[in-house]
Length: 231
Image (cartoon, rainbow, N blue to C red; front, side, top):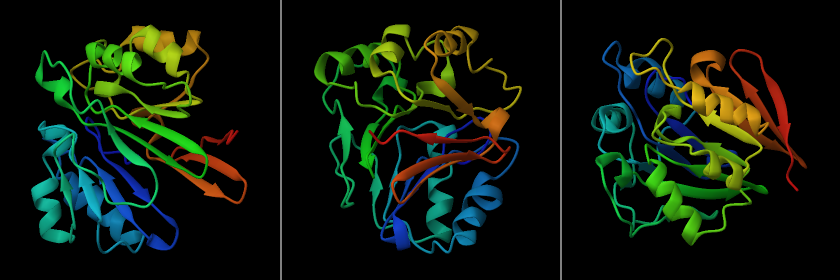
């Protein structure tokens, strides 16, 4: 999970760069995230091509950098629809392709993917109503890593959703001193009450999750380290 301020960008890379997938490429009004963060990071890791970019929805802080990114890095697939498959060999599905939508953020692609025994749920900006629909349709009790919806705002991450997914680790992509007040204190308190470990970019910087043998490690740019239980 890259630290791009008040926006979203996450990179999924298989060993030996068998595949590389980006979820969102958000821009920022204060800097060009593509030029200063995303492309330099990709190049530092020797990534010269992306197999897919999943654009969760059409908000500047999620999709704003996609066009510029394509000018600098070849992208095989741009995923903008909930019923479009991400072409990788590990399980990667878009949940709730058909849904009842009340507002634009609820159009967000919700991605569920699994790798090396760890299950990930990426919520985009989807809100409480989508969370309720997800719980009705899917068993989300095996989620290990939950990327909270809408930067930890009060419109997402209902207590029952957090309790029923009960992840080992919650991630929040959020800018320091952002004008929206994200993440909301209620969400943070719920995470604490549920004893869910949480990392957020405004405090911890970029977050890296990686497998090594039988182990799955977590490290942040600010020096926090930990392990995930692969069951």
